[in-house]
View 1 (cartoon, chains in turn green, purple):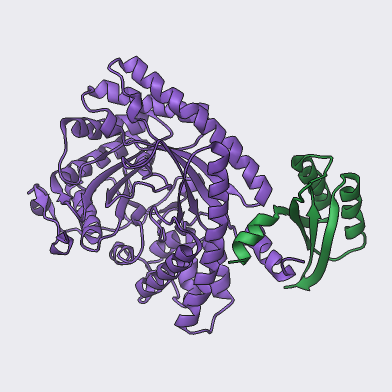
View 2: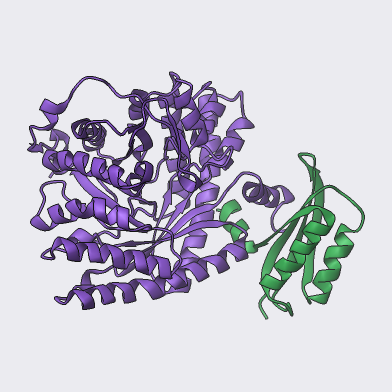
Length: 92
Length: 451
């Protein structure tokens, strides 16, 4: 099955358990993490997970709802975006 | 990773912090084949053509917004100029069509539907005159219908009779709507583009196919942010920085437009890369000019700064998309851009400077307030001035003027919502009536004799 890749980007203050909390959700949703990168930029903790949602057992709406809950709980901003938008904006 | 974290962060930051959005996706719909000699059937045809597509537009746009995490703010419909399909109808039936458009938009949850207008740059037919006469009633009795009248073109010159008529019409609309706000749904143009996705002036041109999906991208906040990060670079580098950013946001707009068109099964039309301010703090074209080093918009240097901005946006956008069209430039509305309105209030920006700035950008004199007591001929003279800039320079210019009943210069008027608010502007106290009431056709310019 062809992969369907999205970026899940987390911005906020660094704290314990961010990766654990998010990867636990992704595991249960059957979403594979292809790559992870993180760094402090402009004073923010920024983490980007490159995930394959092609075998996900939940809808994208449901995944978004789950992330909304993590946002509230851990005071973060989480953005979920299809890979194509990055291809369009950053590759000629 | 395929993309660096910096690249990912840049895109995410644009939407989360800098108000980057797709300002509008506008589906153009042909209504020419809806014509029927029975007005009831005619109206049903229009309603049945628009409504299912408009509903699908809304749901498909919502899905794509979620997929890419980029907000799509407005979903709108433009239709064949009603003046073309309403020839031969009496005024009551033309008004009934306005009502049908309003009903279709309401039932599909579309906030604005454009195209209730005519192209009269060279002359008015009996039908055009009826449509124009219907505007005060049409705009005061509907909520979602938007209107345009193309009064001039570089090819035809200016229709001074129609310009005079529009001065009176605008005054009448103002009287019949609260604080004159009905005038916010009417744009008069020179060289009106047939594929413009932005309201109030959007219509589905006569050279267009049955359907066409046009996208208006925006992002003054994104451009302002990169300009602010480069306070000391020279003008050449500044242009380069803006160009690169415009490229990225246009690419995002094109991706979303093409995907939306394909999901609706309609042809993709154009990307209109116009920076469009909103009343949100920082989402302002005026703030970009100020970030470039102009203390307040309207100060000397503002026209040059705006020219630089518009040129860089166009170059970046043209590189990013094969189908750039519509207005493609920069809006400089007064009430919809908080920093513009405040510049007028503080005496930094006059109507004369605003007019000068419109010579280097789209869209013309937009969303500005004048006293309700302004004579119709003066409104026509303001329109003639602005449209002559478009005619002579082969560009689109427009006027969206709001005479506010009972208001005097300096009064602050709030419309709320997307329309914002601002101060009533001061006009020249001297008369232009003898010139304007001459009527006739203003010749096209010699630069247009190119065949």
